[in-house]
Image (cartoon, rainbow, N blue to C red; front, side, top):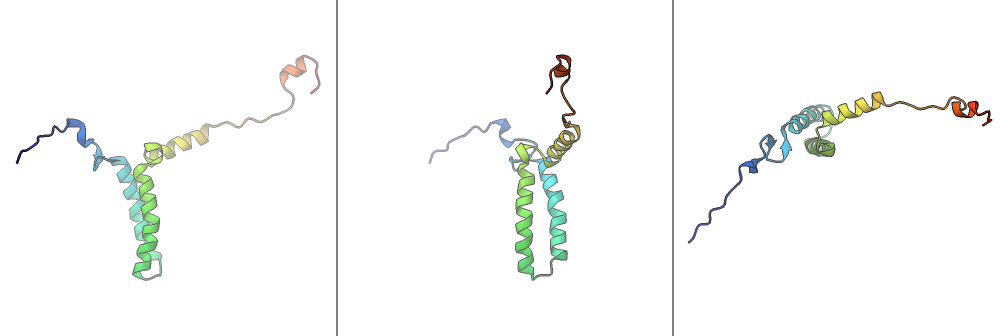
Amino acid sequence: MSYVTYHIPANYTDAGRLFGLFPIRNTVEAAIIAVPTLFFCFRLLPFALTTNIVITMALVVPSVGFALIGPGDDSLSRALIAWWRWKRRKKIITFRGTPLESKKRGRTV
């Protein structure tokens, strides 16, 4: 029986990630979303245990999956802050009469 030695590179583990796949920030945000959802589903739903589990998983799995992956491989909080800044700083352009150029040239619009 012969043994084969494989060289594993030093950067293989992707430090700063959970299971080498999810960034730690995304994992914390996913936990922050999952814990209250689990609590409220089990406390407020008046169904049997099996039904509560199915409804809870239908809510938790997609939301936590989205939080783990993140929009555009970014964390939810960063995406929300970027959206909020964009929403706050965008300007609305409105038309208030004729342009200055047409008034100077004596044209009627």
